[in-house]
Image (cartoon, rainbow, N blue to C red):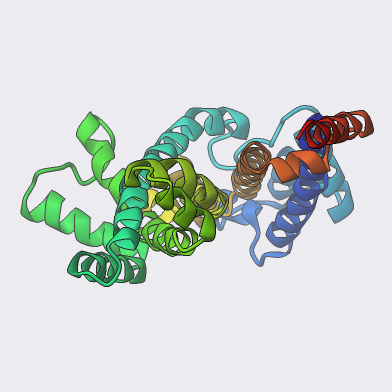
Length: 328
């Protein structure tokens, strides 16, 4: 198990370095001059050169890239914002909890609603309820997240005035962003849970469990649901990644002081350290999520654990199996 986790952790290093090189190269080669955008129109060459040195843009591409990678990976220093002169790490540490809270809350809402509805839809296949839930899931999955956010903002914030349209000054400000982040995931999870459950409940071991007289609830919980977990955990990890990295527009629409607003402000102002730092942090969170999903795989499926067992552990398991066969 330890070898399995270490193997996944080692892969994070080249992935993060690759992401850093790609993002830094894109911002470096992007047309435009951040020094000119800061100084404006009227400036002298001396002021331009001094500002360029202050921002750390005086070196070559390789010099800047090497310096950035060294500081980011050894000192956790993502640089300083061109506009505010505030360290990127400080801004991220203040804004990251908001993004994580919205993503985790949306994910829990997705599982709490999507999983039971998907199971009910599979157990009531071809019924009116199944048709209604499937059609509703298709409709929700087809609506883009930003469109849904705008419609919810207009309906509940402007027309009905039930909820605030921006900010998180109270607990009510969290409702629309979390709900809009979770709606697409609910639709996907409902369909995935339905499809997986339909495949499992048709297996021979499910019919055997029912033939033994076990209650339907026991059959579903102990046998069917357990064997649905691998694909559901896969979707779980993918949706958490999408909610964390893909809900930037939704957070911007609701003016939340999270990673989304920070990222958009950096793009508009050509604040390259902000862009690089936010993308690097999002990439790290995605890697962490994937590692956690892989660890869950090992706990759910014993075949994955067996693949990474040491030679002594495999020999001990083999002896136990042989002893069981001899005893029988």
